[in-house]
Length: 248
Image (cartoon, rainbow, N blue to C red; front, side):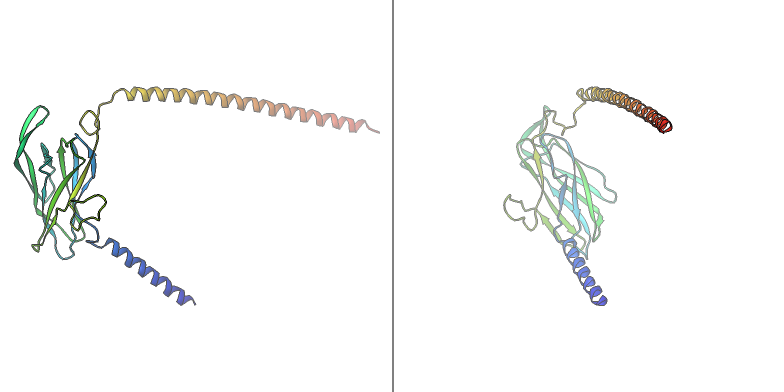
């Protein structure tokens, strides 16, 4: 009976492990993405191109990211990644755009990382500081081309459509939400909230002091009542004893 139970438990464990591996196996659902996947319109933000290696017999050795030509970014600055070289290509804009009072006629169009390696079972993040993010669209597409050391090329360039199944090779999408008026992604200066917080702290402290005082007063009253009750009890006992001693 015991052996049967052990065998059954082993079978369940094996099935559970198999299901876990099925859901976590390389290539099950991983693709080139962006983290975070949502930022404010008009802001300057740091985003990370997240690149998983989906092959168990080859390493990723090149990543090429194409920016959305319909919504150009005036500033794209990659952060150095150890072991990787990066190149930013620019392109002429069909129509100049104005950024902080300056007319921009060209903008970054392609970022390429080479020289490094993302081994099977690993992923790499490539940081980018970008901005100002456009205010006339709700999303930006980042189309990526991933190259392996066995010369296989995977193109993550298909645009996802809301309400439809995700394409086989979706492009990374950065959602843009309405932001604040400062245009810096919510990095605003302190506008007096610190003083307000200080006032709140002072009020809370005063309230605590009042509460402590009330508690102390209550404790003293209760102590006095207790003493009085105790004295009355002693007196009652003495009187009762005297009555017994005088009884015939």
